[in-house]
Length: 102
Image (spheres, rainbow, N blue to C red):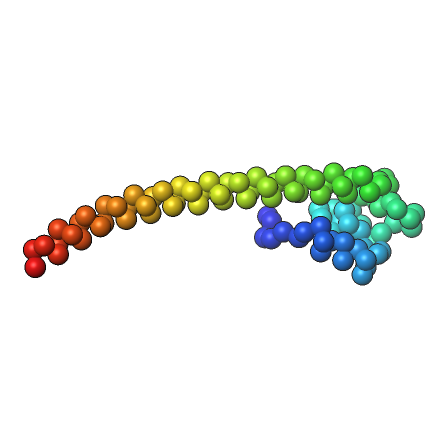
């Protein structure tokens, strides 16, 4: 379950501050938390060593999911705005009728 999102700028700062921390572990929760001994490579949960291309791929997948989530939320907002506009139009004439009776 995703509770929030972490941007690439934050990931970069975390990596600069904690260079031994595995970015794959940080993003996915899989594999070893600590960076492997080989520079520029990280060990994943299957035990093989991967390069930064895998991290880039994981980040691109995450970005795509977040973009889809934002698009879905935009659609929901549009639908809610249309509903509010419709209901507002229905309420305004009804209020005019009650004011005339006074």
